[in-house]
Length: 180
Image (cartoon, rainbow, N blue to C red; front, side, top):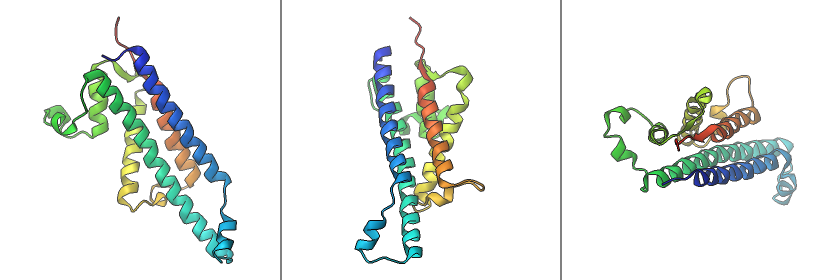
């Protein structure tokens, strides 16, 4: 059985992992590998800019995928602690109410049965999290290209920061409300 302390521990671990990921993001913003390009004989400024842009694009994509993995692992750990078994979406999809749902929606619904859910006024973060996971899926299916998910009028940094903000808020507002 999951205790309130166990719940807090799982959430704290996810918070730490998100903070480490955020630190990596800051390093991406501050780091330019221009000396490395010189080492390999790439002097042309246009080539350097293109290589830097492509690499940054892949790094943002990998951060989004890791961000989703952190939340997914947090929810799976909570599920294991609550139900004392591994999450099996194939088995749960046999339930008519779950047939058209994603794994994230199923695990959230299962956890909410055990009083683990978003604060009532913050439920919109469940939909926002679903969009983050759809974004991750698009990254994977679009050959790991972050450019494919950047909205018009936005840039890579704004897009990543919006995804990061959503995940941080989801984690923060997830509560364990088991009646005593």
